[in-house]
Length: 323
Ligand SMILES: NCc1[nH]cc(CCC(=O)O)c1CC(=O)O
Image (cartoon, rainbow, N blue to C red; front, side, top):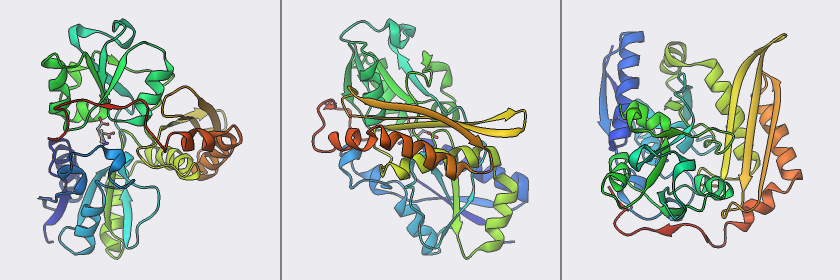
């Protein structure tokens, strides 16, 4: 059989993730694979992500390459995928997710609670900013982009006291040892889909879709992320909105159940709606809808709208944008 071309963004994290999936495909299906780099607007631009025209900046170039027949498989971080389905594209597999939590890398081994008042903490994510502001730690949150290496470098060089990153990305890069605290989801709920990967193919490649689903899909992860993403979709929010959600499969007396927690915040973190719900494992969509409806009844839309006109919290930090 022909070699499968696996499209990947150029960043080190993306190449690492795509490489892991390419190896898993070969190990489990016997198909040879080759990585094909595809550059995306999100990699090229150094503008704040929130200004790059909303959802999916990292995703569309890979999908275009799939549809153009330049690659056969695309690997994305699931949290970067827009919630709307894309024409002609199938989500073939959602492999078992890594630890979904956020983490900090701070100077001198400090935890969040140990950071002195006035400490500068880097993150470009409105979701992280809002939830960290809500903790009232007296830290100063500083806008930050760039690859994982650049971000951690801000701490090593002393420009920042700490940076916030997804634990999963650090683990895949072999840098989990530099984490000084993994943040409890009680304090900061991760982005919907964080820690999970999405493997997409052309929908017309039905045999490949079925083969990758059989080889790599993890039904528990898929159910959890479907539930989380339904909350995001129902709130009509994108991947850069201050919305966190984390679902887990728990074994109850009557079989498997899904349990989900979610938060929607104003950008400044001053106001938030934080709720949880549980329901049957086989209806993740229904559970996500139900929780979102409760959040909306509690004013989630008002909070999210309040943040769209201006951004009072994120201050761009010199020399931190880019690669
Ligand atoms: N938006 C960038 C992005 N997309 C996925 C990850 C991490 C890996 C993951 O969540 O699976 C990151 C970096 C980060 O948030 O630290």
